[in-house]
Amino acid sequence: MEASISVSQIDMISALSRAMDLLNPFLTDHHMQTAYIAISISKELGLSQSDQNDLAIAASLHDIGAITLKERLDALNFELSPPYPHAEIGYHLLKTFEPYSGNIANIVRYHHNSWNYKNIKDIDSKKIPLSTYILNISDRVAVLVKKEKNILTIAEDIEKKIEEDIRFMPEIVLAFKSVAAKEHFWLDVIDPFINRILIKNFEWNKLNFDINGIKNIANFFSHIIDFRSRFTATHSAGVTASARTLAKLCGMSEEECHLMEIAGFLHDIGKLSIPNEILEKPGQLTKEEFNIIKTHSYFTYRILENIPSFNKINEWSDYHHERLDGRGYPFRLNNKDLSLGSRILAVADIFTAIKEDRPYRKGMSKFEIIEVLDTMALNSAVDGDIVEVLKNNYVKISEFCIISQDKALQDYKNFENKVKNHS
Ligand SMILES: [Fe+2]
Ligand SMILES: [Fe+2]
Ligand SMILES: [Fe+2]
Image 1: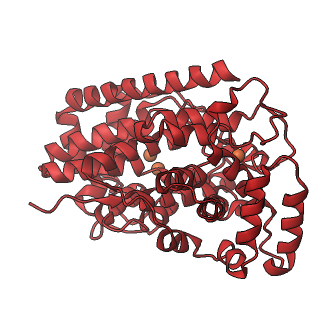
Image 2: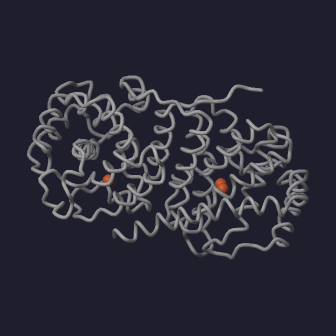
Image 3: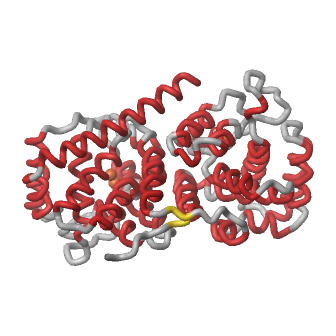
């Protein structure tokens, strides 16, 4: 039996952080830049290792609650007044993952609150960790960095703006000024490989996730991917359950079945690069919109390839829109290239997707689903043997899929209610 995989926390977080920044070219590296600035300041202030680590994670994910493209761009605007729905939504998303539900969730919740308490009248200020104010200032600095101008020329201007802004805590401004005096700080911020600098230069908590830990964090990532729309709120959960059951029935080992679950949770992570305005469009997509949707499995590949030891998971996840006849996308692979794992995930994805309601159509019946899959097998789009396994075990697979989607729906409803109560 092959060795169980393990993945470092920072590799997982930086992959997710980069995925979020794919949404718009203006956002390139925004999360990583903010994390780099925040950690530099927290080191200067002498924060404890564990506080630095929590801040790094919070900064890497701070705008996860900004769901549409408009919200993501609004999140960069510092002149907005409270409430800040994306900070509240981010807080509730983090609450769905136990290890991040405490300090990290709190830092994200208040990251737009300024230090001078003007807009936090109703909040018990003791609840707000110091790291929140470090994140607040770091976010502002990252927004002011413009890659098209020479960074060392505009650095002085940025420092001046920060210094004159009474919304920032004076001690943090001083620490920022002392890190900003070094040229390398600014050059690091705009470095296209800032994720490598972050991983190399800071003492991250060297937490490694074992297979169960990876499954849990992958499940949390699937909430960020799927909770953007009520139509897809349970999609990854359904794909995961059906892919795992199919994998078992096709003779895969227990270890491979675990990997298949992780692939199921992450297969659509590239969708974070697609504006919700397109994902939720009720009518027929234009050619251009469909082309944008088509990019998602390519981005899944580019995001997951940064995680060493994810080779198999990456291969199974990325190829879920490839076809045996070579007419799929984005690699135009064919039956010679597609492994059993990729074929299983492709069938599980189609099975789950056509069962679900979408803005433009209702979910299909068992009869219709089997008809679609049979036709696809006949046209060499998907593997006929796997479709046979699915048909022969339809009740079992569909039951597992429903149980898992019901659980995800419950999580989504809890999340939705909490967000509603606060807005
Ligand atoms: Fe924000
Ligand atoms: Fe997909
Ligand atoms: Fe999918």
